[in-house]
Structures are given as C-alpha cells and as structure tokens.
Image 1: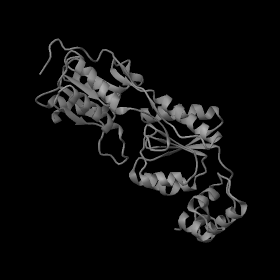
Image 2: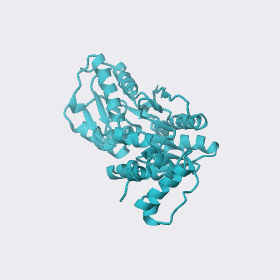
Image 3: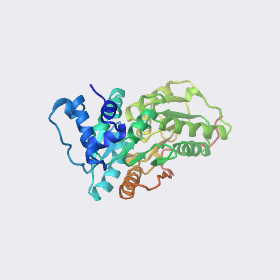
Image 4: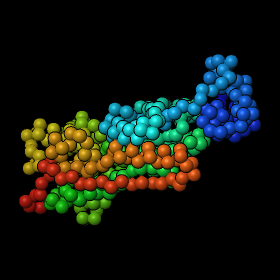
Amino acid sequence: MSSLKEVAELAGVSEATASRALRDISHVKRETRSAVRAAAKELGYGPYAIDPDFDSVPAKVNAIGVIAPFLNRWYFSHAIAGAEQTLRSAGLNLLLYNFDQVRGREKLFKAELKQSRVVALLIVSVPPTEEEFQAVLNLDIPLSLIGVTHEGQSSVSIDDVAGGKTATQHLINQGHRKIGLITGPRNNPFNFAVSNNRRNGYLEALAENGIAFNPDHEVIGDFTLATGLHAMNTLLARKDRPTAVFCESDEMAIGAIHSIRKHGLRVPEDISVVGFDDYEMSEYADLTTIRQAVGQLGELAAYQILEKLKKPNTVSRQITLPTKLIVRGSTRKLETEID
C-alpha cells in the first residue's frame, strides 16, 4: 500500500502539506490540493485505495481528537470529561482514539492520524516517542498534553515526584520507618512515567530522613483494586511486614485495606495506608490520600486548545497543578518509633 510520503513526492510537496491537503483542515492552494488528490488517486492512497473515483474530501470536522490508552479507568475518564465539558461549551466535539495494545498505538500514530480531519489534538498521559511526536507535529494543528510534558508544547500536569514524597513524608512524620510501597507497573508498553515518578518521591523521602530502602517492602501492582489487594497479600506474607504502606493510587490503596482486614488486622491501628488521587470512593473509605484535580487537568488543556485555535501564534505553556495531602482515618501516629 502506498504511503503519504510517496503521495507527497509524486505531487512535489512536503509530507505535511500533503497531509493538510487531504484532510482539508488548513489553508492549501487549490492547485496544490488538486495535485495531491491526483497523486493519491494514482497511487491508491487512503480512500482512493477503496474508491478510485473519490475526488472530494469532506469539509473540516468540528472535532478535537483525544488520544488515550484507556477510557474506562478513573483518571482517563475524568480528564476527558473535564476537557469535553469545556470544548462542548465552545461548540466542539471530541473524537476519541484509544488503544490497549502496542500494535494499536503504532497504527494510530503511523496511519490513522494522518487521515483524520480533527482541528486539534489532546494526548492523555501517553508520552509520545520522538517518532510519534514528529508525526503529530506534521499534522500542523494545535496540541496539548495532559499528565505528561514535552519541551516546547502546551501541557497540564502535576508533580508526581512531589506527591509521592509528600505521601511518604506524612507516614514518616507519624513515626513510621517500615514503609511499604505498592507501585504501578514500572516497565510498561505505553511508557507511563507516573509510577516511576511517584516511586522516586517515595525514595527521596526515605533518603532525606535517613531511612534505608528495603526491596522486600515494595510490590508492583497495576493501579486497580484487585492488584492492590494481591500486592498487600504479598507484603503481609513476608517476614518483616511494614507498619505503613504508600499505594500509588487510591484504588490500590482500597484493595490493600481490604487485604489487611481479611488478614484480621486493623487500619490504621496495625497498618497505616496512604493512597494517591482522592477519587470518589476515597472519602467513604476514610482514606488518607494525595488529591489531584484530574478534571481540572482536562479543563485547562481544553482551554489551551481553544486559545491556540483562536490565536495560532499563542506561546505554548506548561502548567503544573498543585497536589494536596488529605488526612483521613487510614493513618495514625505510632505511640513509639519502630526501628
């Protein structure tokens, strides 16, 4: 099958110009557009591969593309909802692109986006590779990142390192020295940085307080209630169990609490637990956690898109929203310090 690069070469234009001409989302001279369409028809590229008589491109769609690996997980659904409310109020719709496998990700960045006609793009918590990022830049449309950053591009995120450090320091301030860690996957196909960043905050807090890291106090989960439960089961089965646990998400923390109680132990009397997110169920679980305003991340990213649509030369900004420690009943101060 022919590529966009081959179409551009035959038409005598750049790949970016060919992409804009076929998607009809940016001003392109009529003769240039005709040349690109003719090249695409000759090579059987895109819709021309299916219908050789296809000689017109639908008008620009009034939609913002949203790239996210998951739609049904708390963080992603709330970030997208925050963006969607803001964009709908401006008369724009969302076109969702999601993938759950690496192959789907490759197809999206290498082919699907080049044929899309969205007017701007939001990327949620997926750090693009340099190749992917260049593919996005070639679209020549406004871009904003949620939960990740890239030099020179608009983004809205939090400081996950600082959040992890605050959570761990809270437990240290309560007198805990044996502090467990339930992480998200550190080596994952989507290159998520969140888990490593929160873990780095945990390690920084331990180091600054002269506490040695114990590898036996760390178990890997996957940001779900079930993996939090299984990870806590593992920690409780080890010889030197922790007196407190920092879980990198609230769902894992609630799973950990369930495990602790199933083992006949109490929270926080026997083990203190801190989560991260402050999602809806955290208050009902009486969970101490690090609050992040996920809906606001999406909302501000949407405003960045709207600003660039109105004024294309707007300078890109990287916004970092603060997190906040929310103390509830899942943590307590130790009466005596445990070595």
